[in-house]
Structure formats: C-alpha cells, structure tokens
Image (cartoon, rainbow over all chains, first blue to last red; front, top):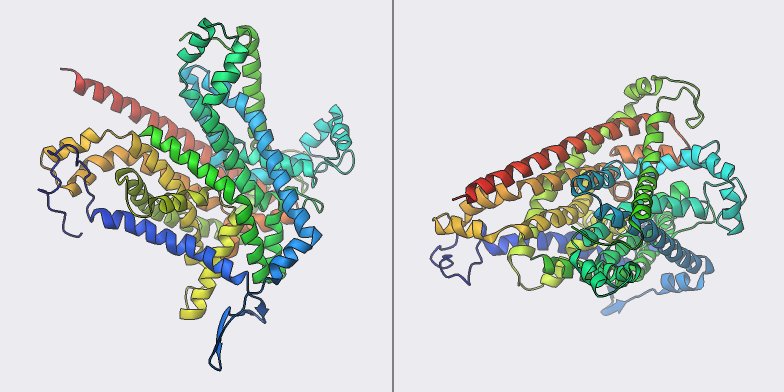
Length: 321
Length: 284
C-alpha cells in the first residue's frame, strides 16, 4: 500500500475541504478503472472503426497505412459502407431492427407503466415482495426463459393452443404479424413477444423507482385545486415519472436494436435483425471488415439514445446526492 | 396517506390487482413451463406423457453439459470478484471525486456497456484481442478472454449498484471517524466498507449471474475447449426443443429462487437490525 497522504493536509477539521482519501489515493481510485475502460472499451471501438475501412486479404485484414518505396499510403476502403447503403437487404434489416425495437419499447411501456403504477401504490409491506417477484426472472437465465417460449408457442405449445382456441391467431394474421393462422413461432409476433417478455423488468424497475418516490400530497393539492383525478394523473404523475419513462425506454430500446439471441431462437426467416446479420458476417462469412462496418452502423444507430439515457441517468444521480 | 386515484377506488383496486396478476403470469408462465416439462416422459418436451425423472438422470451423464456448467461457474466466480473490485473503485471515483479530468467520458464509459448491444461489444473486444495476439502471441482465445469480456459488463453493473449505495451514505460517519483520529485507510476498512458491504454482496451476486448467463460475448471470445454452459444450451436450443435443456433449466431456477428468496430475507433482516441499532444509538 502506498504511503497514506499526509493527514495534516486534509484534516477534517477544516469543514469545506472534507474530501478524504482511500488508501493509495485519488489517482489510483480513478486511474485503475479509467485505464481499464480505455483499454477494454474505447480502444476496441477504435480498432473496429479502423477494420471497417479495410478489406480481407486471405485471413488477414489489410493495413490502412502502408510504407513502400518511400511513399506513405493511406488506404481507406469505403466499399463496405457503400455496400451497406446500396444493398436493399441491409437497409431493410436496419429499418426492421429499429421497428421491432420501437414496437417492443412501446409494448413494454404500455404493460409496464400501469404495472409499476399499481406496484408503487400497493401496501408498503407488499411492495418489497412485488419488487422481488419482478427481479426474480431477471436472476434466472435469460437464455432459458427465451427458450421456454419456443415450447409454449411452437407446435402443440400451451400458449399457442390457447391463442388458437381464443381466435387470437386470426387477429394477428389480419394485422400481418404472423404468416398463416395457427403458426405463431418464428414470426414477427413471436419475436416482439420474446423481446417484450425479456426486457419488461428493465422497463418496470426505473418506472417503479420514479413512481414510488412521488409525493402524494401533490395529488391532494391538485384535487383541492379542482383537478379531476384523470387530469391530475396526466399533468402531475406522468410528468414526474418522465425520467423513469426515458430511462426505461432506453434500457429496452437500445439492446433490442442489436439483439441476437431472441431473433435467433424466436424469429423467423423474414425477421432479419441487424445483430444476426453482424453475427453471420463474422461467423459464417468470416468477413471481418464487413462485420465491423455493420457494428459501426449499429453504434451510430444507438448513439443518440445512449446519450439520452446517459444524460437522464446522470441527472437522476445528481438529484440523489 | 390519503390520495385520490384516476378512477373510483373499487374499480381501481380491481383493475390494479388484475393488471399485476396478469403481468406476473406473463413473467412466470414460461419459467413454470420449464419446470413442469422437465418431468415430462416424452421426447417431445411440450406434449405431456406422464411423470419421469429420466432427464435428470441423463443430465448427470451429460459430460458436455457438466463441463460447461463447471467452466461457467469458474468464469462467473472470477468475473464477480473482479467486477466488485473494479466497480468499487469506479463508484468511489464517481461519488467521492466530483471533479476530475475526463469525468464525463469516464461516467459515459462506465454506463455504456449496460445498454450497448452485446454483438458490438463482443466483436470489438475480439478484434482487439486478436490484433494483440498477432503482435505479442497471447492471449489465446479461452477462459481469460471470456473473463475480460464479462468483466466489462460486470464492471458496469457493479458500479451502478455500489454507486447507489455510496450516494445514500451519510458522510458524517466518515468524518466522525477521521475526527477521532482514523487514517483514511482505516476509515475505509473500518467504516465505509462495512456500511456498503451489502451492496458489494448484491453486486457480486448480480455480476455472477450475468456472467453465468452470457451467450453473445462468450460466443465471440471463446475458443476451442472453452464451451460454457450457455453456449452448450444455445447450440442445442437452435436445433430444437431438447429435454436436457429443460432439466438443466429447472436446476438453475430452483437454485436461483432459493438463493434470491434467502438473500432478500437476510437483507431485510439485517436492514431492520441496523435501523433498530441506529434508533437505540440516537436515544439520549
């Protein structure tokens, strides 16, 4: 352990300068995780961006900078990006990924908001149990829970049979969400259902956090001032839970855009998503530059939502301290 | 507390309860179905043909799966330990030091892996590790590379959990200790650490399960001979419904359910204990 800093410097008696130190000091506390993230998070992105401008040369990736006969050459191959933009399949896949992610986010919000609302209004003793019940699926393997839907929606599956008995498959078919009545698995419907199911707790928890700490006296005040309960809900409760809505939506939307496991297990041939395309470019075609270009585009697609998410999270933390 | 809801109370209570009930049904039916069908005496798992334990007997013989479970447990253990250490440092950096150079970049990098699509994280880490390997000859793809990838996710989750606890910490406790002559090191080990111990345990458990469950990052970073349990399950699941997966799932569900219920109970009890002690300490 490095020598502890001189105690007389930051003696707590001088109240305003009460910043105290860990063993090893400030540099170590900030430096270690900072360096770690630079090396294992930021640097890899730089490498991906670099490779996306290269091409495959056998099993190697070509160098961008070459030095030959006294000439320094910079070769940037925009071919991958040009291909991504021109090929209709890629463009469709990007749009479809965004659409499925948006549909999932909307469904999670529609199911999750009332859910979190009633949770936050339950008896306090009950709330801990309810919260645990929401978290419990999150602790059990997500892969296995997605896998379970294959059994439930597939041929002879329990949920599939209920839905056919209730005629719900006809409704879905009318809306074009399944290819044929009675076939529920490997359709846009099963894909969005699986994603909604997986990400619902990520929506409920931030919403619950925002709704549970709301000051109920505000609603009383609104009622005293003549607001109907309905308008008080829209003009007080919903705006106060805005941070929770945004955090939850981003926590659902962003990972859904690049989701791989759920489209692979529950999606079908017509539900191509960008995560699967990236996977295939890398594992099936061994085309690293192409896979990198796809990854760069995915990052560009989600960078604005990520910034939004980060802003609201930082704000929420500032408020807590 | 008196408050009014958007609709008449009776309707509201009825509607709220059914909404919660339906929501929990949605969350739990798939899990229950895994458990039920794991006892199904039929090669087609979702057609009930009577009770059997034979899938569990087969699971015990299933060397590929057992090796995967063992490997996953090892990686998850290492990930959880590393994540808690790094996460504690990162959380301290963010909570205790309000200002330092590049704080915005730092807090962005900490929380980005929470939402960043895993295919992107997996691919970028792999490409970097491969470039390093070509330059210096290591690391070979395997347990170490998987661990590095999981640590990235684990660091993000651990930081969020520990940070939340640090923020609610009363700084007066640490100041009091320093007034009484404790060195900063002693303050950390004797005052701060016991106070945040619970969040360290939660962070450890959370990062353990995240690592134990991860498919995508693992698939990118694993090499020959490092097939974890999720990779085994995933490759079997792609082929179709496999009764062995149901049995494995049931084992995991039971372990997790018992663990989470016990942990919640213990945490609630120590929390009550702590509040009682604090109350007793405040009494003149």
